[in-house]
Image (cartoon, one colour):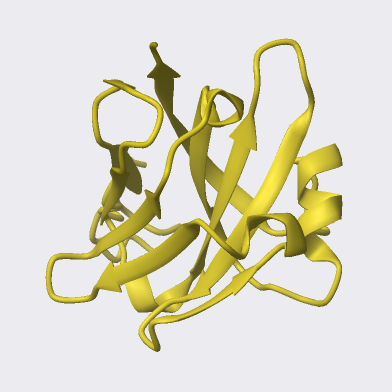
Length: 151
């Protein structure tokens, strides 16, 4: 029996899967007071099929959930500590999510992640940060970008 036949010898078409990718912009060096805009370009699936989360990790610290985008609606939800200077936007035509941080401070130096999730439920941000590989929170793909501030 060949790889592409059933036990009844009917040919099967090979399953062709596209690679799911989240590609972030390059690492950046900025000065305090500047604004930075990071991008997360999505390919291999329809961006509007999954929500996108943004996560921050300072050196030697745990993950902090910034918020998530209800993709296709341009309606972000922010964690309370990220509501003032952080802005999440999207461009559906180019399958790109953005995170902009204004009035940068030294506290903003960190690695920033965009992550795809299957579903978002109340409280899932905290669960996603503790166990990003579990099925409960739906986080499936994660990529990072480093932001460094200099004086």
